[in-house]
Image (cartoon, rainbow, N blue to C red):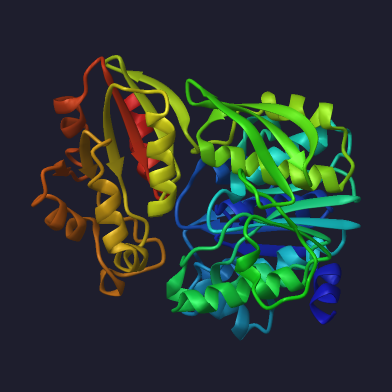
Length: 450
């Protein structure tokens, strides 16, 4: 309650790391509330340019004096305690809020909070749901961990009846939310730099589930030992909501949905991949709970074209098709490869940038297995995107390369200086090039396209 009062009384609010996808959305939202917003980041980006155009004061590089005169400082989980702005804020006695705390406070201002959680698929599912509810005339406010064309970015400022947000499990930040409705898409041993064991991950998801009034969940075993009521969904039975007559046509799916053995509606998707059937099924389940007209749901899902960096087609390079995807976990990458091979039989080149040293170490064997698949014709490994870490915290792209080069797979290790040369040497008119990873690998893909 004290932090809610602090936010309400604060007029000048500074964001450390304002260029982050979630931070920028929250900054825009508070700006729309009439707050005076400033922020800093380590580099200029399209996001910081957009904020500056709105009237937000932006500093590139962190400077202690940037927090002087503000009422509240908001910082992201990527900010360390020795950050000069954060330290100076504490020295001056300025109130601080971590990003997830701010998200929880803002969400509580809305009548209904809808949170989408899970190790994979959160952004796509959140965007799917947002589009459906906007098309249904419900005008939700949407906080998205990515960018969608139909939102013109990562935020939709709507009414006060519904607040839709991704619920990220990193550092247990999703426990700051008190959702009326939640979707749990999947639970996997992710972010073990925070949780250490998979058992701890499952405990956190159980806590999240118990904080939710109405729960939709892919697999009830993820929240074992709870008597809480929930609706299950899956492509196959046994589930409350499930699929029949699943058909794949050039990578895209059509299917019928049943609820407790009663036919609900037929659907078709414009997105490729079986994993997107599950994402759509999660949305359909929640829309069924909200009594949204299924004709509207079906029409909206049929015209949903995805979000940026999720199988985003950039165009062609020397007649080779260029696609970027945010996948950075073995499960996500395997789903991506399966989706591609569902309709494409030509040569497939994967350019992969590992995201953090700790994740690479913790899922090392799974990465080796994933990139040893015969469906990948050529693999190019790109230096690790360190994010918040140092090399001492795990393993790198070079470590992956040293193991994979001893296998039969055609693998190269390329640096930012020679990445384009590597690609030119192996791309042809019958090639698809997938740039895969959650770091800055998309920048190089876009440069290649230009």
